[in-house]
Amino acid sequence: MVKVARLHINWQSGIFGGHEAEPHSRPYMASLQIPTHSTCGGVLIRQDNILTAAHCLNESIPNVRAMEVVLGAHNINPKEASQQRIKVKKFLRHPLFTGLNQYDYDIMLLKLKTKAKLNKFVRVMELPKKDGSVPAEMWCWVAGWGRRAPGSQAEHLLQEVKIMNIEACKASWQTYFNTTHMTCSSSSQGKGFCQGDSGGPLVCNCEAQGIAAYTAEACTDPIYPQVYTRIYAFLPWMKKVMKGQDSEP
View 1 (cartoon, one colour):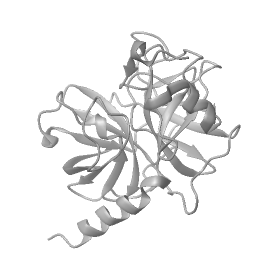
View 2 (cartoon, rainbow, N blue to C red):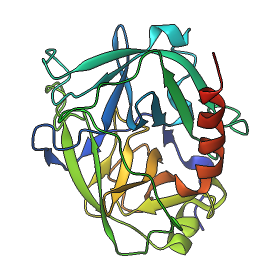
View 3 (cartoon, rainbow, N blue to C red):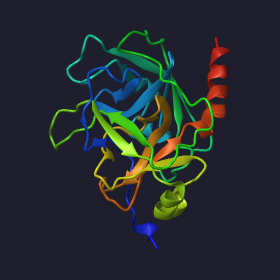
């Protein structure tokens, strides 16, 4: 029996065990930044909307106006000609997300002040069109601006991860894991997300199926899978929010 009281959840996530992605091969990727540093990853799902994790906006960010989204980036620093930096107009967390001590409903939309300009460097990501249950043993991709070694430059890294059986996820994480709202991937092969990219997408069959949510503090701990918020479970909420935006002045 897992003693969940001893677990330390790492709300910051990023890529470990990955290789550098081909430049601009993931044009839907977004980096959420405040003036001092990058806080999270995200995914462009509409020209004026970023999907990310709700916990990415916390007490370390005093005002959403301090946040900007970077699109079209391969390396975040230095700035590249392909990059678009757009301020965030407002954020819309899922109404049932209550804060850092809650792991469910960890999903948020960021409305951008201006629409992104779509080109070969910046594109909208496809969302699930039907039942979003991803079969166990399926290989999917996660990407982000992690560091392969302490002190190294943040790079756009790519990693292939294997989806785990839902029952196995539940057995490992117990009450932390909601079988309807979450999915997970194995960390037993030393691959996954760890420091710097919560909110980045889990991509399966060219569709965003999940949002990086939480993992054990020791990112490579083989006992505890990497957990993602299932996007399909929240599509009705997302569509309602974006439809409401369209009627705003």
